[in-house]
Length: 46
Image 1 (cartoon, rainbow, N blue to C red):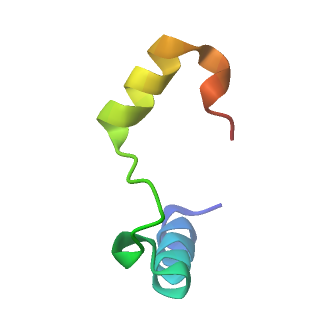
Image 2 (image 1 turned 180 degrees about the vertical axis):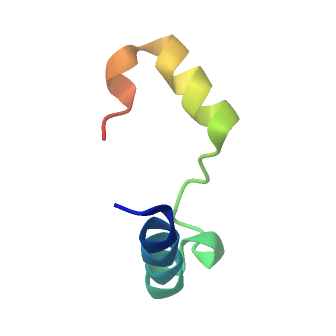
């Protein structure tokens, strides 16, 4: 998948699901993902 299409897909998902403004959603950034992987490698899957 080209980077442009991937960026468009992510933007569309963010707009549709409104994750950043939903208090029931967890905010996960790169630091959080690193910490979760340190806890156990199976905490994140693609």
